[in-house]
Length: 195
Image (spheres, rainbow, N blue to C red):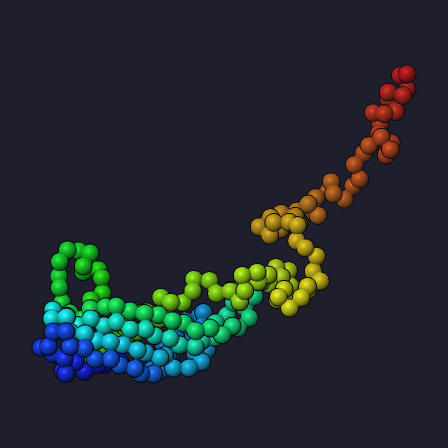
């Protein structure tokens, strides 16, 4: 989205406002986003500060995300805001300034596309959950536990140790009963013979 600033150039304190709907196709590339359900609503205010152009505003878009626990789809609205300066000429100071992205005026226009996209990407939650108490998926069969019990037995063994439990089933000691008093221990008979 490019904004023409020729009307406020050379007039410190002058500003204009913009309200527009933009396509949110760039969000479809993210694995967390199932579908984009509408356009990105953009409200911006551009102010000439003398040395730069201050862009403030807010953005929102309806999307369908997937719960990170049960993988069910859920609809939500991503909302973000911005406050960035577009410099008339790039500034080069110390090394930290070089690492930060600088927005620069291009002739009579400001290109706010990356500003809008970056703001919305940052607004994505780190972990999407349909509800705070979502039980997730069954570790045995993969069924969604949010829709009811799947019938699998609870796993009382740490899943990281599961391969080791198979070794116990294969060991010869597990196949033969332990020799104890009630199984006719030879040591027991010896003690009885001496007494």
